[in-house]
Image 1: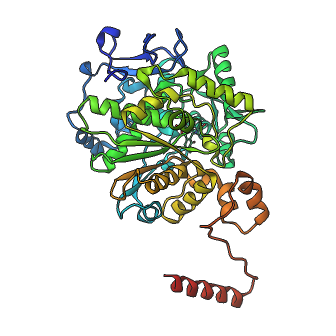
Image 2 (image 1 turned 90 degrees about the vertical axis):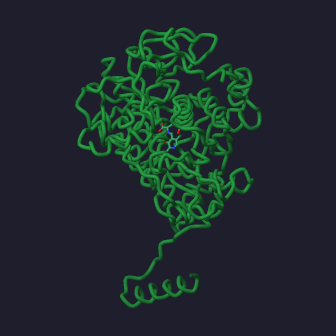
Image 3 (image 1 turned 45 degrees about the vertical axis):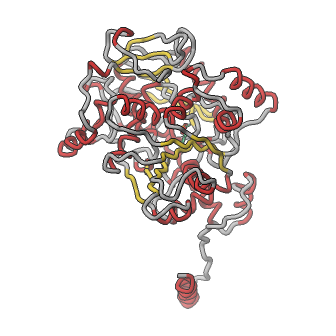
Amino acid sequence: MAGYSIPTTERSTEAAYQQCLNPSCSATFGIDEAHFSCPKCGDLVDVVYDWDRLPVPRALSDFEAKWSRRLDPLCFSGVWRFRELLPFAPADRIVTIGEGQTLLQRADKVGAFVGMSTGNLMLQYEGMNPSGSFKDNGMTAAFTHARMVGARRVACASTGNTSAALAVYCSATDHGFKAIIFIGSGKIAYGKLAQALDHGALTVQIVGDFDDAMTRVREVSDRLGIYLMNSVNPFRLEGQKTIMYRVLEANGWEVPDWIVVPGGNLGNSSAFGKAFIELKHLGLIDRVPRLAVINAAGARTLNELYSAREVRWRSGLADSAKIGAFYNELDASGVKASTIASAIEINRPVNLKKCLRALEFCDGVVRQVSDQQIMDAKARVGAGGLGCEPASAASVAGAKLLREEGVIAPSDRVVCILTGHQLKDPTATVAYHGADQENFEKVLGSRGVRRAGFANRPVIVPNDLDDIIRTIALYSEAESAGA
Ligand code: F0G
């Protein structure tokens, strides 16, 4: 199919190289160069492989051989045990801290909330990564590339998780990396800020939001020659492809019907699409899942462009006039992204075009969900097993919406990606469940959240043994009456 043809050797003498996404440019670069946009035309850059010259497994199940070699860090890592599918790095350059030990959990209680048949909803829990979010999948790959090109200072703009992961990789490894992170003022959840500070990153808080921080970090990196770790870095996305390999692995190499993922800067959705394009090209899967990308209503650029204005990939030429017009409208109205799901509080997603490619290849859909839907879904995820932060719950809220619309059938096999750990943002969780109405209004009411319908309120009891015992008895009775 045009637009995602897999390039061949003529383009380069290397089996792995970089290429501009813009079909009217298509410039190629060596793997030993660091570009965060095409130096010729400014578009996004892809990592591409000449698979004919690379040793590719005959079947995905061949990867199982790595399980018995878990003492080798490259077999232990949930990213690098799939090294043959991201073959850009010499083994002795790989930077790994054991990322990707994540799990695909069958979640029937959450499935019932979403409206799925028993056994058909699964949660891919990326909160189990060393820094507590999916970002580590990308960081291990980008740090590996940074090491290949001899970079020392590494920077990112972040809504919190990228910066946490960056700080962890700098502090947990011994290759002389120094972390510089840019955050918007008051825009980052405490759990994430705590990580950046604790792990010793130079934390630059600018007056503005994520979109402002992103613009600045690009300028600063350019000016000072600092290696950029945001997902405009194509090597980040190579690592994030492996989330999909692990979903397949945990599902006995069966392809599910749907992958549902929150959309912020659109790195994950782009990486997932690339993973499936390549797996299909290599004949390692015979069909692809459908992709659903879920925006928060307060940061709905993708949904507006894709669902309302019908912006499409168009072989890499993606309607740039329509995109530009929307951004001009945003600027003219002074609208800033605003959602309780601070991780995805982004109005100018840098990977928009790559995400459009993924949506086309995976017959994708895009939806937006309100902060009320996000917080309710988050509470159900917590009650049903693994906890997550608000942005992650957008995937479950989105799956529920698509179920209600009849786009997803109860019998479909659906995987929602839980991108970040519950403890990343305790403020939102405590405001939802807590009995403090003032706090609820301050944190959630201001975001349009009106009810905490699934709240598990703490019970306030006098410090008296009889009172405590009476309260427990009362709750046990209420529970068995409700059971
Ligand atoms: N979920 C969480 C928990 C995130 O931290 C992010 C992005 C997303 C979803 C969105 O993923 O950008 O691939 O669409 N966080 C970035 C950050 C922007 O700076 O930590 P995406």
